[in-house]
Image (cartoon, rainbow, N blue to C red; front, side, top):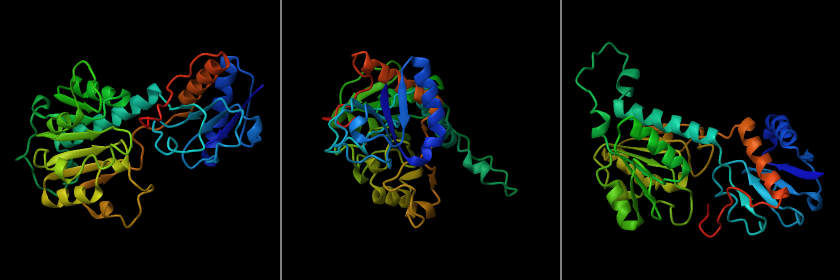
Length: 310
């Protein structure tokens, strides 16, 4: 019997218990899934931020920790974690992110708010957007999610530039890297999408100096991580008109406090961390498959490299 501890947020247990047990049964694994296994008896931990496990020291038998989210910044620096850590890589996560990013990109590209919010009897025919090939888009972070979003935007005709720390070669995306590449990627961009992980090297990567590189009135879309943006610099750029709008799905503190200036800034759209939501049915199958690999002595999939933080 394989003992699996559900150490994610307690309120997630009701939606995950049945899908996980179904996935384990389909994989042929004999699993005892519980929220209260004794630490010394646990073979695998299913984890999420704000879950029930923060000290991994007692879990001496644990073979791996399975993260339910794509991001691991809440756990990767935990000094008690010595077990292998696997992040969630799920096609449904990618699909959800692509749909959210494309939807908000088109919203700003087309200027939809002018008409959706302007139902006041005024015939606003003075504005029409450029076609997509004339609207440069930059994506900071072209891993799996960033590349998927870039391909979808390319299919719509947008010229897409992607930036990463290390060299990448992705069809249909102009790939840049390094500090010089970052400046080039941002200069003149009209829509910037942030899909980087949060690490010490990416915190405040979009600061006042770099916001000034964008085209005047540019749009910033952040479904990545809140600390990627210097909040005060963004608010100042919005006030000056250098940034025309910011659509933000992630924040330094979540839920976003009711007194945060973003709520009062009319050129900010706040969405409640919904761009890419882990879905129990598909993620349960991925966890079951990874545990099956571990039990067979095969390498785990989607292992986190803690030296780089993702």
